[in-house]
Length: 238
Image 1: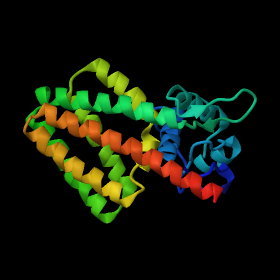
Image 2: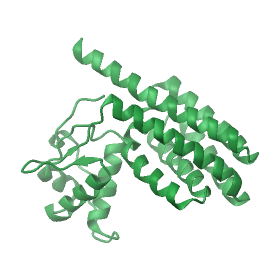
Image 3: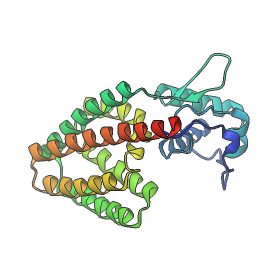
């Protein structure tokens, strides 16, 4: 994993956030969440309020509310009398999270094959084509945004409200790790191939096959994260 860094070392935003969003705190939380997911704010990063206010063009009150929103998602840890920081998960946390996420993804796939409409299949298929084009360009941020949309739509097609609640809560916690799981080119290539297989299973309404693909997909992603962490740790101790 990347070493924690201070916000003062990050470049300024090209444009500040405006109060025209649904809520300024919510817009700030969205931006910070993307920064955490895409690794601009790695695990352990101290969230310097002054630096973030300058970068995001916001005052401290909505920024602190954004921190509280992210803390509720277990992405940020609020420390008494100290600045907030990005949560760091242990190896056991990562392993357990991906095991549970794999089960939730598999159930989503199985139920989606029972309930999904032709229009929903067509949308997921179109998103997959776009995502694979991003993969061919090696544009990981764009690839990942489409990837996340595909998984969310499969979950939505499952038509189970409780499953969606549990899925969304855990998925938010590990989005940055799912993003990092594609840092290894070979593992990213394998993940892209698995998505093509997902579309085939979804079109065939083969819930058992799609569930198995999704469970294996998440197992591989969890292992990719742990392997990457070990490589980073070995570099730090070399």
